Amino acid sequence: MNIPEQNQLQEVASNFEAASHQNGICYWLDTELMLLLGYTDYAAFRSIVNRAIASCAGLDIDPLDDFIRHEHVAPDGTVGHYKFTRLACFLITQQADQSNQQVRLLQYCLARMADTIMQQTDLERLETRTRLSSEEKALSSTAKTHGLTNFAYFKDQGYRGMYNMSLSSLKKRKGFNATSGTLYDRMNNTELAANLFRITQTNERIKSKNLRGQQNLETAAYDVGRSVRRIMIENTGKKPEALPLADSEIKELKKEGKKAVKNIRRIDTPQPGRKKK
Image (tube, rainbow, N blue to C red; front, side, top):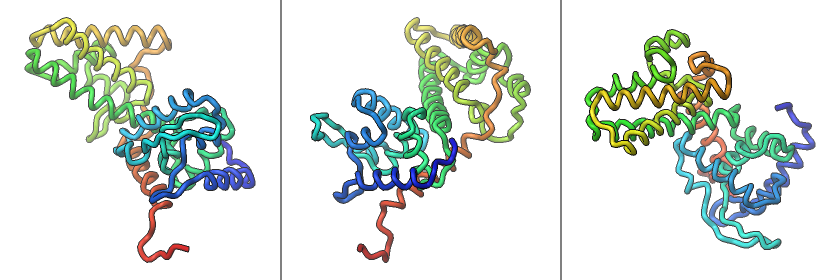
């Protein structure tokens, strides 16, 4: 994003602060933030709010602290449902339509407050990686109750189906030689999402077909991986093993995210010794 003109930023920042409310905490009403961002359809805006809420998982924060339920009616009759903290506003601008100038300007202002270079794709990648970890645990639990005895072999069959090679070969193919972390931690969001789909569908196949025993479970993991591979090639023309790794590791994004959360929360947190004017 190109750096906006200073007078534009000042106007946007001033309008944003003027729309805030104080009642124990500093907050913004969803019906008012929606208009600041150029949205007139509350249902469309609500879908953006839901994506912002989902992104909290990747930052290890409880969305209930920042997306506060608050039923109210705006002057135009729109029924609102939330109070947003400054952090919630930041996350919403990251998920909103980036082609909208009002979104871009407020996103830039809030990113400066958070002192972060995080982009929408970074938050999406963090969220998907968190969900993948959770779903892989769920798959492991399901497989164990269906007679799995060796999870490593089972997991490798999923990779062989999707990538046409073992996990160890895939690491070499992608140039992943880190001594810590997993290959997932360097995948871009597209590849993470494909693996998330593979894992959830493997879980569903095992449960729906009531598959049992190591061999049957390995076969299911391979077959689902093969299906995902075919879909990816049909849709993009690219083999999944050819997808490039992301430049940053997940732990670096988490570190940047924690810094952004800390910085933006500090703005509305009373500091010890500071007198209110």
